[in-house]
Length: 157
Ligand SMILES: [Zn+2]
Image (cartoon, rainbow, N blue to C red):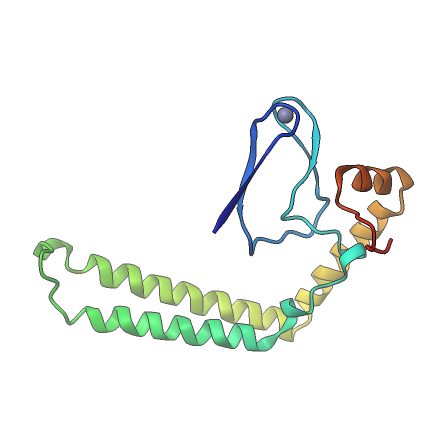
């Protein structure tokens, strides 16, 4: 399900996003129309929220890999089928799309697993954490996060 947020000042649509989207950078953004600052709900300050452990779960990659194999296998299987209502010249299209989707998932899962196992993913998050620490070391930045509603009561600084 997609969410939308609008500028509180001028009403312009600021962004549309899916709930699972997460970015690890400053959540402070500016309305392109009126310049008013707002909080991008996709963005998270790692120095405040901590590094998400779920990003390092090998089981997620293995799960995606298996889904990819099943989808690719399905696409491969469809090559031998004739689809009713589809012209002969287009019979290859759907199986090819499904097969490529499955292969993309497999490759994505393998790359993610390699990055986790070699520690390169960890290093990337440590770098992002350090950048976040630098940002939140500024009192002015913390005040801005509070004013914009990113830091609420109960959230430690
Ligand atoms: Zn605006």
